[in-house]
Image (cartoon, rainbow, N blue to C red; front, side, top):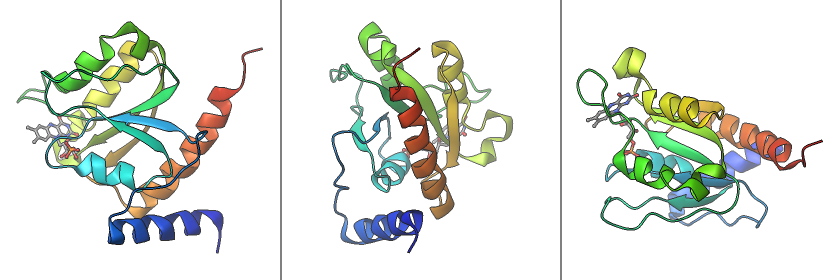
Length: 164
Ligand SMILES: Cc1cc2nc3c(=O)[nH]c(=O)nc-3n(C[C@H](O)[C@H](O)[C@H](O)COP(=O)(O)O)c2cc1C
């Protein structure tokens, strides 16, 4: 079995048993928001990454992240597309320490929103001047798990290299 096929098989097994992924300390760190519908949460659970879920309520304190990470953010636009970045994510990124460690963005959304598909991730990436690494729909497909697993691994290795 190839390494990626093995990752997918493990992801399915974990989903089936509802057990968390066991990963090493040097695995990529993904910080994410996911509402009560938990689409993003289900997707992140299939990845071999360390993860931190942002609190559901803005009244709860946001975690401060002091090491490099990738942010996964679903879009929640009002009609017309305003305010698509969840306030919980805005609150988290308003902390300059957490914002300084952001390396890239993963976008979650629904293609029914047409040109506004994953618009929140586009906005965050542009504002924070980091790359938008990938977009996935709802809880993602097996192909998304495969591509994000591989892409994150490569991105992580490259990001962790000391700058020349
Ligand atoms: C009120 C509302 C507005 C949304 N706006 C957008 C949008 O502008 N663009 C988009 O791609 N998806 C949009 N979505 C879809 C969500 O981003 C998508 O369902 C996502 O998987 C939700 O993730 P979560 O279940 O982890 O919170 C919207 C969903 C809702 C309920």
